[in-house]
Image 1 (cartoon, rainbow, N blue to C red):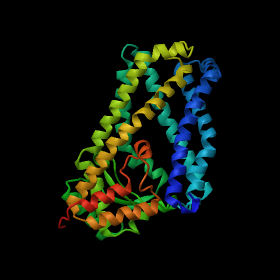
Image 2: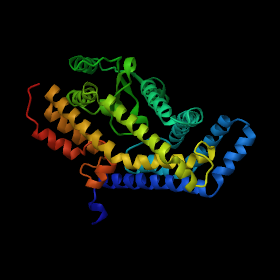
Image 3: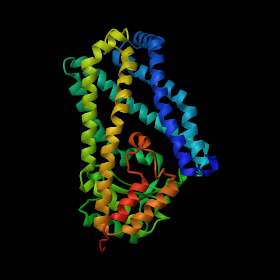
Length: 372
């Protein structure tokens, strides 16, 4: 097929799929090279002698490993998150601003990485018989805390947001929240356009930090009806307890993954010629477990997520009655975000946690017209 006959959305998405696959394989290969080259053992031994403390040595080891991976991944990251976005006219962000965001992401992700991994090793050392239970409980607890703190601490590091200035729109959103029995702290708008021209809206936070965040790229280009039906979809997730269900699914995946490591770890340690799973040098093996489990679980978790999204779409239509607004919103989002509206089945299975736009539009067309 002539390349010109392929839509920009399909070309953009295809490149994203290729990078998604190649990045996963690159990570696995790097972990294998890191172990079998002997670098992992050499680094762990050197830091152990230098630090004189197991957990300080582990923190240093994790810093080095993460920095090496980040540097190796930097060219790929630059292309897929900066050059590609500019090539398809999805961003006007300056290279310096992009680099600052990358540095912030590096520090934040490194801190989270160290906390979770240190907790994992601590559990193995203190509770050798049932460490997988203790480590799982901490990881699940930490994910809940992170969900609560994200809108308060993390989002403001990348975006400036303020209370929504459009009082009429704000009143309509608050009215919808009251109708759907959703308690909100406030409705905010963020300067999304400084980083991307894609549109987005979110209902984020847990407990008292729950809030609506509207991107300026959406607020300024979509009608009140279209924004209402988008937020009705987001509120539906809350009403249907999808966040709780997704967190429960994530907890199950963590528990199963850690249990499999607990059961098969001793055999894997022998196969990799390691002393013990709790050795710092065993980290590549543990990371391989998590990477493989992520690949295996992705189709299932994506399938469940797509089911939740369909349920939220239906509830949004039932609550608002804005069938035509829903359809126009899907078409606008597909065009503005260069979404792959009709992916191949295998792509849908591994990459889509939302139903493709074409399916969402067809569902809405079949949905009975409900008076608003």
